[in-house]
Length: 208
Image 1 (cartoon, rainbow, N blue to C red):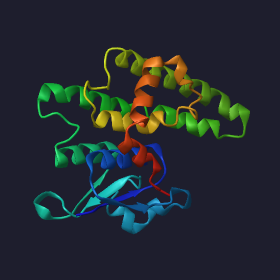
Image 2 (image 1 turned 45 degrees about the vertical axis):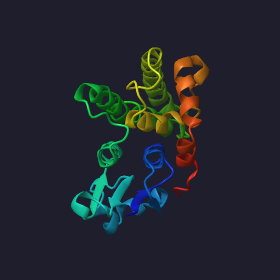
Image 3 (image 1 turned 30 degrees about the horizontal axis):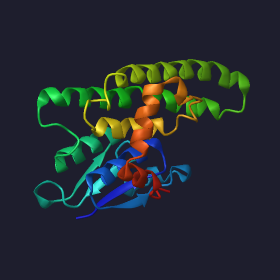
């Protein structure tokens, strides 16, 4: 049965469209226009209590009954469990997937997201401190990723949902004012990810 993806054209939204394409799952996009506050509609609140995109409704959920899932990290874990793909069965092998997924959720998302915010401010005095603070931390996170990828093809060894989570935000590196040439291992990984047909479809599908 088709999965409904409630989303908008954002890094967090792209994580899920990429994962759905890589997993070969049928889905339909239900745009939620966050520029018009559609995320606060009562009908969306029923499936996303935090009024954030993305969220999904899987009509073929556990036991054949529908289930809704909100929070992009939770959605990735759910889809991986559902399909048995991109999340190793062995617990030891799962640990780096969990680690790098949480790295993205807790750092490489919130920090560049603040860069997005402060870049958009018109008042230079308001912009200066926040942009300096969050740009510095964002570049530090790129460095963490670059060191990890010096010894790994993908973040958890094999391709996993952690890569899908991170590529959604790396997609905005230009907006982060980051030249990937300064982080050659991230650049290699990013180009390999974006060269995958399913990832390409995940970024091309209209989300807004």
